[in-house]
Every structure is written in structure tokens, then in C-alpha cells.
Figure 1 (tube, rainbow, N blue to C red):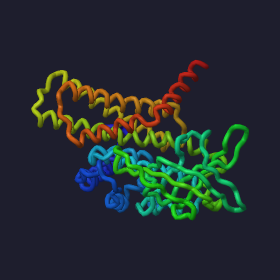
Figure 2: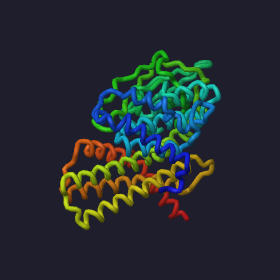
Figure 3: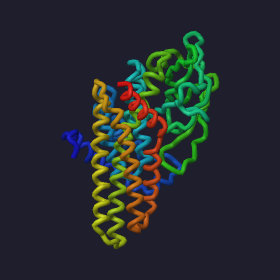
Figure 4: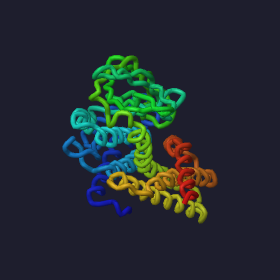
Length: 377
């Protein structure tokens, strides 16, 4: 057991186990569902699981990022849905990291209590068609017109986009030399000129919904700016990916634990002989899971800490590496043992493999930068 697990966190884990077993594990349709499970989402809101990291003054439970990591891990281990956990994590990232972290008092009061209760969902609108999220290629603009800004552009591949009530839109508000100055705006979905595009029909990470928005002369007041004007990439864009990676480590560890439990059960059900080699392989995979769990908790604790930690980037890089290593070694063990896969195990494996491989190029760049820093002394 990780040393971070206090009495409150152990109680939270037991609470989430009960919730997942009652509301999620009983729904084998989630991995193929085309509709978002609003009944589960609303039940999460009633149970207080969508405001775990928010302060009590905003109807949250004051648990911080560590509570979100523990809940995310447990939801997947006991419920088996990586897709639903992805939507939950992104909901927490938007409410806790973005709005709580950078919002004004008015913005916090307006959005956070509703998000904690599950009555409102947020979505970060950063990526754009064909160019992704690279700041140099962002084309969405926000032109100032008196006390308002006029937004024009398109965003795509937005996690929770089809179910979002408010979009955190990053747009270009100026250019200095060859550098674009980016600003973040809170844009409610019912703002005139904002149109949600058709949901993307993905065959993985269901039921997490993905979609896009088009902005056609969308006028928002200057009071809807989130954070500092012109500083969105430095303060929000770059660290957002790190917060997302850190909080996804919990669900990845929980998913791996679920996979291993399913494999052990199949070995017994299918009468496969437990050779010494098979037992050693299972033990090695269990050790990887335990390590992933400790790394996930430590990374989330670092997010809660007001001080920066030089080890944080290393945790994120090795968390990704351990997750990919687990999937490779599990695949080899299944092949060598002749285990016949179930649809649940196949679906979960696909989701975890894809999740662990997201943003590989970004991770490689960070790894090279660490190496370059060593060479400079």
C-alpha cells in the first residue's frame, strides 16, 4: 500500500469501489455505447465524485489532486471503463486546474458548484483541424471590439466536447514577431455563433465523447477571459498536458490491475497449467502495477504541493514507459500461455494501449530536453 493512503483516502477508495461495482461494472455496454451514460454521470454528481478536488466553498470535497487520482484508479479497477474515467479526469482538469486555478471569484462562483454537482461539464478547446494543439499553428482568433472579443475559428477532437456546457477556448489575440500571443476564454455553449459539430464516432475509449466546435463571430465579454491575456500557452497550454498526464496515471494503473485480475481468472477458468514461468510473469506484472500506483499517487501529490519538484517530469515519463511496458509484457504472456481473450479484456486492453501512447512526440521532446540539460552541465 502506498504511504500516501491516509484514513480519508482509504475511505474514499472503499466508497468508489462500491459506486463502481453498483453503477459501472454492471454496464457491459459502456465499451460499445454510442450515447453518453448520463445516469452514471448524474449519480457521480450526487455522490460528490465530480467535485473531489474542489474546495468545500464551491460544493466540493476538498480532496485535491490526490483524491482524484485515487478515485480514477479505483473507478477503472472496479468498474472496468477507461473511457468513462477519461471523461471524469478531464472534467476535474477543467474545473480544478483551469477554473479554480485561473478563474476570477465570479467565474468560480458561476461554474464550480454546478460542475461539482454534475449539472455542468467543461471542455478545453485547444486542438484544431489538421494542426493539433501546437501554439504556432493555432488559427482561432479573438479580436477585441470595445468591451467584447469576437472569436472565429474551429476546434476539434475535444474530450467531452459533445456534452460540454462551457468551453475553455484558446485563441490568438496578438502576434509579437513570429510568436502568437494566446488568450483563454470561457464560452458557454449557448453563446450565439458557437455551433457544436457532430460527435466523432471512435471505436475506442467509449463512452467518453469527442467532438468539435465552430466559432463564427462569437462575442464574449472581456470578463470571460480566464487567466492573463496573452499568456495562455505559458500558464495553461503547457502545464495542462502535464496535469492531464499525471491524473491519467491513476486510471492506467487501475486498468492494468483490472486486466491482470481478468487474466488470472481466465487462467483458472480455461484450465491453463500454472508453470513456474507463468507464475513469474504474473508476479512481474503485479510488481509493475504496484509501482505504477505509487508513481500515480506521488505525481498527484506533487500537483497538490505549492512547490515545484524536479522529479515530476521523470515520474510522468516513466509512468508512461511503465504503462507501455506492462501492455507489451501482458500481451506476450497471453500469447505464450494460450489464453483465450474475452470481449471485456480485449476492449480494455485496446483502450489502455491507446491511452498510454497518447502524445508520444511531446514525451520524447521532454526526454531529449532533460538529456540536453545534462550535457550543458
